[in-house]
Every structure is written in structure tokens, then in C-alpha cells.
Image (cartoon, rainbow, N blue to C red):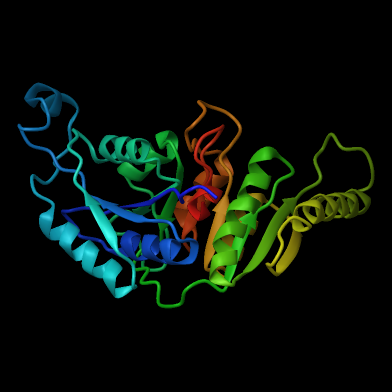
Length: 293
């Protein structure tokens, strides 16, 4: 077995939000992956002044206090964390570079300032990372403290490569936590489909259940529930997020490889979910399963 790929948790030195660190520590504890915490800084020493003036953000010059708090938060969860302080003109650029350089399988970020407690919210940095990070991105809901742990891990199931990757990723996280997996599929008859509405709905449910059953057979050692719901996928997953401890979604099938480019459904979920959400990256690269080696 290979060495586990690391979890990289982002810490904003200006807000010192520790929710991403607590979430990253829980992932590390359940999978055996090493935990890294990173705060992006900028100064004349690390960023060209003209570049910073044209493209840069107002970043902290020193992240030592935030990183020390992150180490202590990880230690409280019985996890040892190593620290990084990459220099860059923007937080998203620095975090994406750190994820690439460390070979991280998961990059954990917090929700935007002002997001209601218990909800996810996408700020500018997270939006850029979701469209360009080289690995899966976990968006942690505001105020998340990890006290509850994981009892139920959701997987957004679609009959596609991305949907099956979400199921495998959920399995890695649920297995280590001793949690159940809840595979969630939304189906809806379309205007171009022939047949009566009731018959179409029954057929779509049956097909989705059969397709999901093929994945369940590979999820050894984990209890799995399969829910097929007739309705809009985004609304179905949003409603289910209130009953989950974590939701894993695939990225859409367009755009550049190695990015977590959002589709319409995933974009709605990350903006409004009531549990942390993991969005997988596209194409070959470091899969979420690499957290377990």
C-alpha cells in the first residue's frame, strides 16, 4: 500500500476560521492521511509589487498566529499538523499551488464571511478554487466544530464516471468513520421521453436503483442506503443535506481536466447546503481514495 496523500486545510490569517482545520483533522483521523495547514501571505519579499498592485489581494504579511491556532486545534482532535505559509498574490493561487506541490488529495476551505451558521457559502477564493484546484475541495459549513462527527455520509449518485467517483470517495470517508453511506439519486422524466408520466417515473426509479446497486456491491464493510427521488437534483440534494453529516459530489463533465469545475447542480449545493460538501476534481490525478493510501 502506498503512503496516504495529505489533507490540506486552509486557514485565513485575517479571520482565523478554524472550521477547515477541524474538518481536515477529522478526515486525517478517519483515513490515516497526514494533515497540513496552510495560510497564504503576501509581502514585497514574496510578491512582485506591480503584480500585487494589479492582480493581488489584501493578504496578511504574517500568518504565524493563525497557524499556531490551527496546530492547537488539530492537537485537540488528537492529530498532528504540519504548517505551510506559501507566498502568493492571491489566496486561491497560493492554496492551489500548495495543493499541487504537496500532492494533496483534499483541499479544505471555510465558508464565506457572513454565511449563516450551519450553512455553506461560497466566497471569491472558494469560487476560484472550485474552478481550478488540482484536487477535491471540501467546503465546510459556517461554525462547523466537528463535535458530532460523521454518522451518515451522502454520495450524489449519477450514472456516470463522476457519479461513481463520488460513491468511491464517500466510501473511503465513511469506512474510516464507521458511518453509513446514503446514495442519493434524483430522476425526472423529460419531455422527449416516450410514455405515460407514471410509467416513465417508475422506469427511471428502477434504472437508477439498478445502476446504484452495481456500485453498492463494491462497498465492502460499509452499510449503504439507496434513495431514488423524483425531482430536481439540486433541490433533492439540498433537502437531504439537512440529514447528512457530509455530502460528496462529482464535478461536472466539462471544462479543463484536473479542476473541480462546477456544474449547475453542484453550484447550487455549495451555495446553500446545511452540511459540509466535498466536490471532486475532474480527470486523472490524486483521487479522494488516496487519503487512505
